[in-house]
Amino acid sequence: MGATDLVTVKEAKDFLTLTGDEKDALVADLVARASSWIEALASRPLKERQYTDLRLPARNGFHLYPPAWPIATDKTVTVYLDSTLQTIWRTEADGDPATFDVVVAGSAPWDERLGRANTLYRALGWGLNAPRLWDPSPYPPDWSPLNWPNPYRIRLTYVGGYRAVPPDLQQACLYLVQKMFRDTDKQQTGMTTISLPTGGSITVPDPSVPKEVLSLVAPYRRFVLGAV
Image (cartoon, rainbow, N blue to C red; front, side, top):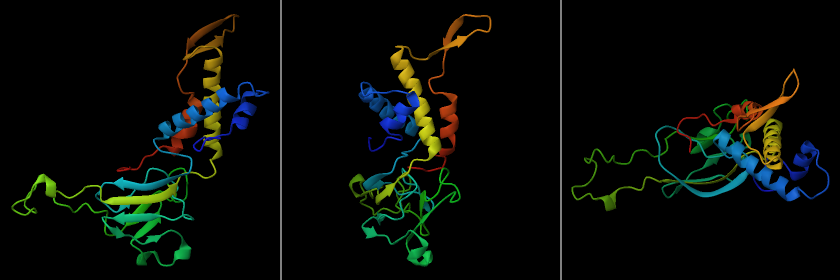
């Protein structure tokens, strides 16, 4: 199973009612491609993975939305703003969040699909106080492009994404694998056959993503403004 696969090859084979191992390589490829496709539909990584030394730009506001969530609060979260290491509150076991620089929070903590542990909150903001290029007054008289501040002032290391893939995302992946397998097996893409009540059948265009997949993935789509 690939590190970012939403289902296993066995789960996909069981769904496709395949026996034997002659098509294992094909199914493994389809699982990997379907998983990547679903992440693209969700506009965010879904399977848990490690992110190391991400350089992110300073921004307005108090929330920093990392690329994948939920943020793993049982793993180390390291954030530097410029060269200053921030203290991170992750869980209630850490004590009073007011005594920390940064708090792991959620825009929708009641629903992991929408936003449980999906943001890093910093009461002092995320560093968008550098001189603005359209207002040279804060610069010294001899300011030049070489002296402009680096906009990528945030350095983040953390683990994010779903450790246990939610069942509805697994179902979406299986539906997409099924479609891709059918297209590959029949050497036909973007068409479906409909049986007529009067007998016979017709072949008509089929949407590239089954509507069931779109419905299952919809609640997981990234919706926060200013997301990385």
